[in-house]
Image (cartoon, rainbow over all chains, first blue to last red; front, top):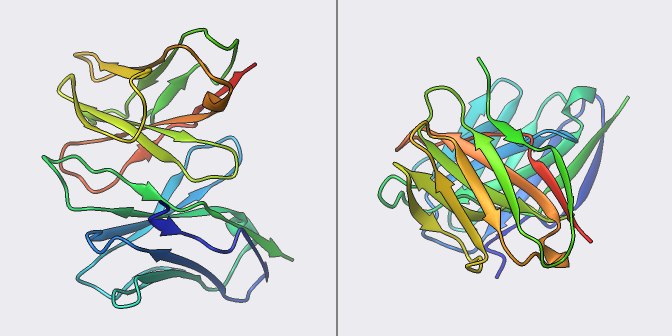
Length: 115
Length: 112
């Protein structure tokens, strides 16, 4: 049962253009969403997050949009840079249980930025 | 400031053997979580340790066990290895009640 889905395994974007990565979830109990970036031979690094009480969060070139009714979130990167080439994981978290946060990850989308 | 440190980086084991992976959390962090990332998949939650106790567990068999030490470091043990246990094992640390992890670079386990 894949509760978090990233349906695009890969995405190729021209440098300077907008990259849009999508993520769908099925569990309405998720109340916190995160995006992680992963380079080869490294662990995932936190990029940006959004609480379910918001519909948009912005941090520099990165913006995450949340549509709760559609159970859909997206990550926008503007402008895209070659260093953004990596695998991007969407993750969701149910409400904390005794302070424990368990993340449910999507399968990842490999983003390639072309010069 | 050292981040999350995992050892070893790579490991090859034979089916049926046992393996122990180690993790030192980021300074100031007291909670350690373990994830398994199979090829082409996202990380899957194995379990989380806080105050030397397993606080939450994912959908993994009892062959997967862990431990947290008083200095907050942690071990992941896998018994009776199967070929399907081949994966990247990620350790992530945080402090209790926070909303984000710091991940280590992982241990690549290959079972032959």
